[in-house]
Image 1 (cartoon, each protein chain N blue to C red):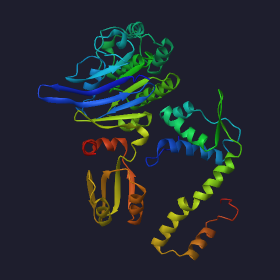
Image 2: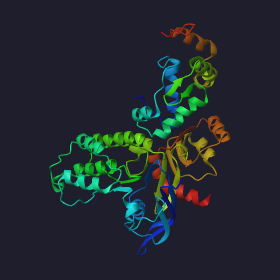
Image 3: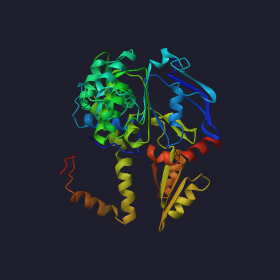
Image 4: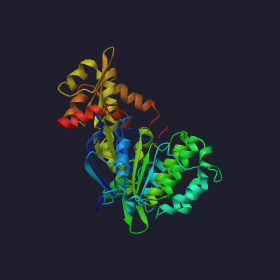
Length: 127
Length: 294
């Protein structure tokens, strides 16, 4: 079971875990998403908390409710999540990195060299 | 909808000792509520009043819409599982059978499954069970009763962590299928924190905290970083706890912080972390004071 951390509200973490699976393609568009009771049992959390996380994704249009059957991954959900995460990328990953780089006196050129040397290539394929 | 429990301004005094002081709370149907507090905070007194075993000195309580004391119609709709519950010297199977006659929603199927899960010997006399096994019998009865209100008061004397986990898993699974009001009184807060939808924290007989579990995060925050920056940030706030090591410090203060305060903390290179439920209990008195002055 992936660890749930203290800092973020549980229901947000549940929504993020499900969203991760959609971004990674583990949960394909049109596939049935885990039910709140399944999530509650798996993460050992209150079903109301799991429902709140799922409803967040429904409100965002990532999941859709089909009456009597359950929750399903909406068409276009993967691209929608990826687009949103791209927008958040700078704030979540770049800003803290640049702050730490500034603290350590690493200039932009050195940073770029580091990124190139890490094996990360344009186009997003990871080492 | 009628609340499952509605308590108004409950007070309970034993001679010169105040066990409960102006306690008001509601428990809604279909929720799991954690009743948290240190030993002597008033948890058991409150539960005894809710189950009609004791009368309040002041205030009143209704359970499922009626006064619980000596009210058989209400008492049959609630199950109370107590720490170190005393049983007549029945065999385990007999104790289970007696319980099945009492509770209208009893699930024989669930009882059977739980008895197997906890590996309880049906033919053994209650007196000859280990403490943990006796606790497990209480848990089996409490869950299989499927009562509209189930109160667990520290139900796990002698149960090891594996058995407690089993209890939590079965509780969640059955609650998901058959939602009902459950009140879980415990000092093992970190173990149950994620199971709770609502939290009531008692401190010295008073309600320190009464809120949905989702909204509690941030009630108390730890601010840490360079000592000077920490002091600058916490100036003018009540400080529940302070720690210092060399030039670094941390302080526990009431939260949550608005966007301005968060931005200020970032600018001061401070890290902010919400207290866990367990840590909040340590500062229950501070929280209660905060609530009084608010």
